[in-house]
Amino acid sequence: MARLALDHRRIDAAETSLARARAIHPRLPETELTASALAWANFDDARAADILQQKVLAWRPGWEPAMGRLAAVYVLRDGPRFEAAASR
Image (tube, rainbow, N blue to C red):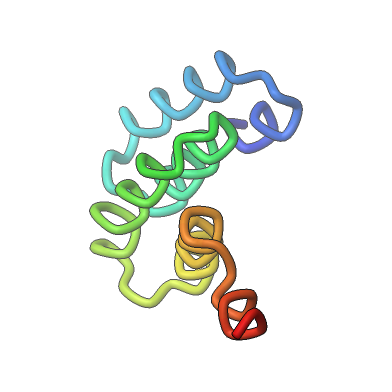
């Protein structure tokens, strides 16, 4: 439900759904992956990265969806590396 609410930009509903999911299972990587998406949607890349590193990847190392999202956060923060190489 949180992901669906987030997809429809219903931020309050997404946050409420995440709180319910955490109450049921506080260490579920999928819940925190959605929380990182919520942070990302709110332009808080630092929080998104923190959630991914401190929770999702700590609980499920190497999980592809989390690794991909973390890579996207780094590209947003640092810019794509190929642009720097192409400008030389």
